[in-house]
Amino acid sequence: MSDLSWVPRSCTLPTEGQPLRVAEWDALFAERLASSARPEPLRLRLGLVGGPDVERRVRDLVAREAACCSFFAFTVTPGDDLTFLDVVVDPAHETVLDALSSRNAARGAR
Image 1 (cartoon, one colour):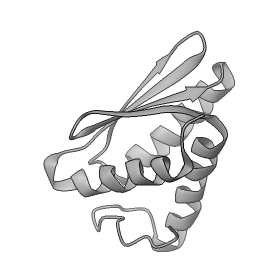
Image 2: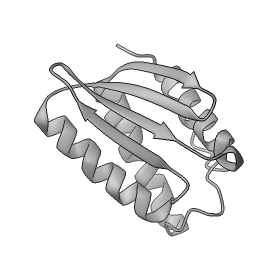
Image 3: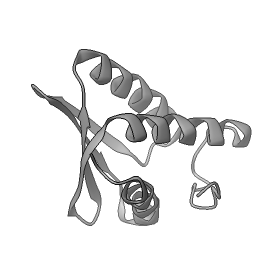
């Protein structure tokens, strides 16, 4: 899954930075992903294990991602045991959400 052809041209992160950002997301999900659901075609809901440190990590990553990929809308909701991350895209970027969802499915939730 190292092919980044799914990264849309509208992403303003320099090409050389894209693999590093994808690796950050992959590491977060590999370490913390507890659940993944697709309640709507344009929305992905992820549950991440951990407390305030995980929430801070998610918020930092989300802020940097939103700065280069304005088509994403992120909502971070802290909970007692899980931090939920909702990722929403517009219809033109559904394939990006598909790729993100597939990357998570390949890892499997805890």
